[in-house]
Length: 98
Image (cartoon, rainbow, N blue to C red; front, side, top):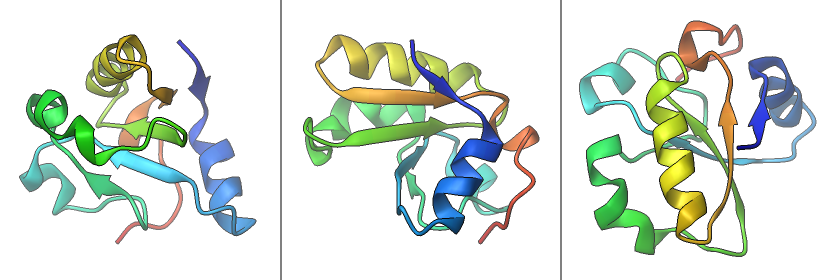
């Protein structure tokens, strides 16, 4: 599984690269703050909402600590999606939140 550090994600945002970020935390967790521009699809709904994702795009998967996003990354990769897991999740995120 491919992975990326929170600092690398923050640099992509600062450079205006506009990465596609999927936050798989629950709605209540996301309400406390998420990476700007991230789309919330809770882990339990990934299987049902993956049709909203584009297999030609790359997605950065995020959760609280990296575990759930890792599960989502494995599942989506097995379905043919191009995904990268953000190491450490939001616990390691030091950038802006919205």
